[in-house]
Image (cartoon, rainbow over the protein chains, first blue to last red):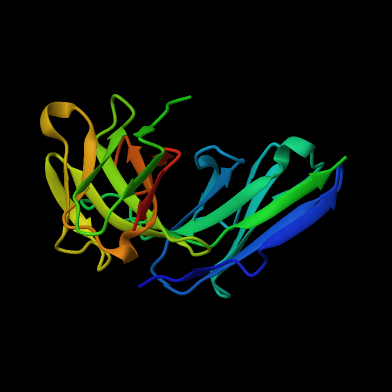
Length: 115
Length: 114
């Protein structure tokens, strides 16, 4: 089955700097790549996603890049703020109709933004 | 935004007992999921459920596991009997539609089997 890897477990940046979190996947049939954020003591919260028909998607300070050849995708956060501090999970799935979503998650990367 | 509630947040039981984890999904959602996360490891898919039926399950969804959502109430995960390796955090999620629809997660139930 699909295996999603997040090679950084922690990342620390200064407020205002950029942060990049990288993920790789193994299943060439994966076509949907969401990112979730989990703040301390809270549930996972959807952040942004990208589908395999594009290689870049931006939403305000967040950009997701997808490299299908390398089976790699990344989350870029610009102008970081302390409230961006959280654990970020990447995930991947095939976009199959009729079976619901079956996401494979990375282990998570803890981002700390210091003032 | 939409919220998925999980009750209880922690549960401690003795090995061999039955446990039921409860999830109150987003009210108009149609697809329901359970994920399992052992401490320090990735969150892993257990099962998804739609229209009263299990659509897909992983190899982690052992015969001792069952799910149901009677009369549109809580979506439950029952483990009977429990084993030590069932200790984990169990996350419930729901989505409006299938495929690539956004999943909304609960904050998890930490299950400890002694």
